[in-house]
Image 1 (spheres, helix red, strand yellow):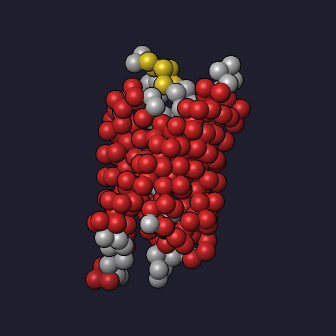
Image 2 (cartoon, one colour):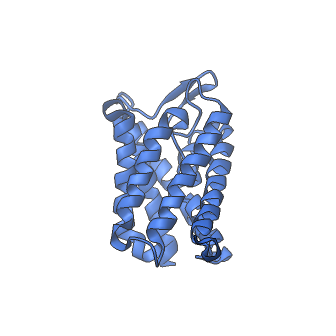
Image 3 (cartoon, rainbow, N blue to C red):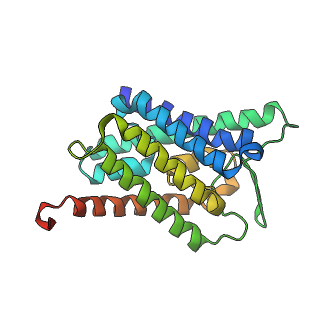
Length: 232
C-alpha cells in the first residue's frame, strides 16, 4: 500500500508542478523553463519516494520495469491505477487554479483548428501531424526509459546519482518534444489534464501507444547491451 500511495502522490505532484509550470508560468519561462521544471520535479521525487516505490510515476516506466523482470504483473497494474488516479487529482488542482483567477495570464493553452485546449494537455501543436507526434513519443520515451534502466541497474547503475540522470533526461525530452505535442512520454501525465479537457482525448492514443512502444524498445536494447552471449 505504501508503494501505491507513493506512486499516487508522486504522479499528482508531477502533474501539479510540472504541468503547472506551463499553466501558471508558461508565458514567462517558455519551453526551456517548462522542460527544466519537469526535470527538477522528477529529481525531487526520485529522492523523495525512490526508496519506497522506485518513483516510476509513469505507466511507461512501470511497463518497462515489468518487461525487464523487475515487478509482477499484478503489481504493475496496481502502479498504473495509482498513477492515473494521482494524475487525475493533479489535473483537478490545475483546473482549480484556472477557476480561482479567471483574469490571470495562464499558459498551457494550445489553439488549433480543432479548438482551444487548456491545462497543458498533450495535443498536436500547430503544424504537427499524428505521424510526427507518434515518432517523437516513441523515440523520446525510448531514450528516457533507456536512461532509467541504465541508471538504476543494480550492477551497472549509478546508485544515488541515478535520480539526477533521470531528471535531466526528462527535462531534455520535454525541451525537444513540447513544440510537437507538449511532450508526454507518460500516459498518466497526459491522462490527468485530459480528464478536465475532454477534447484532448482525440490525440490521447498517441500518448499511450508512443510511450509504450518506446518503453518496449528501451527494454529490448537494454537486454541486448547486457547480453553476455553478445559480449565482444
